[in-house]
Amino acid sequence: MSSGSKRWWALGLIALAQFMVIMDTSIIGVALPRIQADLGFSPENLSWVFNAYVVAFGGLLLLGGRLSDLLGARRVFAAGWSVLLIGSAAAGLADSVAVELAARAVQGAGAALIAPSALTLLMMLFGGEPRQLTRALALYGAAAPAGGTAGVFLGGVLTEYVSWPWVFYVNIPIAVLVLLATPALMPAGGTRRGSLDAVGALTVTVGLGAAVYGVVRAPEVGWASGQTWLVLAGAVVALAAFVAIQASRREPLMRLSIFRAPNLAAANIAQLLLGAAWIPMWFFLNLYLQQVLGYRAFPSGAALLPMTILIMIGMIALAPRAIARFGPKPMVVTGLAILAVGLGWLALVRPDGTFIVDVLPASLVAALGMSLAFIPSLGTAISSARPEEGGLASGIVNTSYQVGSALGLAAMTAVASSAGADQLGDLPALTDGYSAAFVGAGIIAAAGAVIAGITLRGGRRQPVADAEGEAVKVG
Image (cartoon, rainbow, N blue to C red):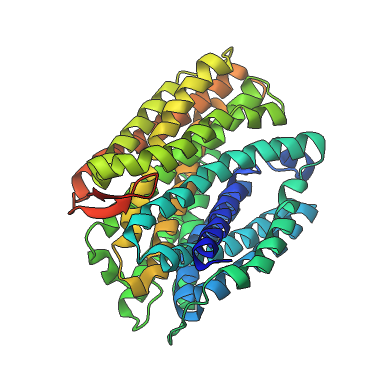
């Protein structure tokens, strides 16, 4: 195998990693009603099947990025797949709520090792050739929505025709394949001396988990209750402690001065708000299809395929050309604005609606917005850091997206529940709840467009590749 073809095979493995870690957030969507019935989840706590994964994923991503810089990206990449394999087996075998959530957290921890090391490996392979980097990032970025909707589709097939534990077991053969291929395809990379900030990793994970828990529980115990405010205050204290620890350590988990790099903070805010808008849309659209329109698991997954196809086309073919012509900032702003329009359209769903009228056109508009905003914000966030801090930058941008996903879903779950989504079987009330969640997510996307317009710098033009790999100018 030539070095050139080996590099693109390695990119395929990296894209598969992105595909899988995102698929694991979505594959449970269609299976949620079955998991709820078999394990005894309450409607308010059901979102924790998603959040347990995302909180561990988002909270440990900085640690994963730091480990990638210190121990070598390939080694951490392989370790992550091993942890994901163990968590997947445990999640499928779970016979209680506690075991299921613990196993999902283990899966998230594995993903937190995989995601930043995969991006670091991508930068090692393509960072020295700007004309290929945008193309590689486009393929990597397209793997995320592909994994998201493929997870819904595959989850529907497995839940409908096999059983829900197989939405977790499917990871096992893929993990074995990746572990076998990694030594031959991935660059070894170097290691660096340094210490691990375990206390910092603990405080940021506890802070994030407490924030999500407080927001999810608020509709059940009351926003004005002492329990809600005690948990949220604890989250603020833990996150403040994390910042203080990072400022005082010689070798912190996250060097705070990295945010002085032009556009890094702004691009991460865009990724955070993109996740906070997109993931609630996916979550509640699944529930609307199944619990209001009455779709079974397999048709529900198939209903989201048009959206996935458009996102993949947009990221691979449209986004690189648009970035080349207009620059990253206009595309981030435009993409978030279009996403907001699509979410506003979805808010018009009806109890007696149809897929063709109520779901398809609005979801395609939202998908177009996602495809335009994701690649330029991701690329800007990664390229703003120094090359030797590639793992840290990858960890930060992945954390931003996952933190946004977790908090956005928690907040919109609270909004939906307060508007009627907790009244199972009452179609008008369910629809009102899901509509309120779409409105809230649309407001987040619109706010993201405004903030990106204010904070992102235009930057100077840089050579990148268009869809065919030819050098063009962007920025």
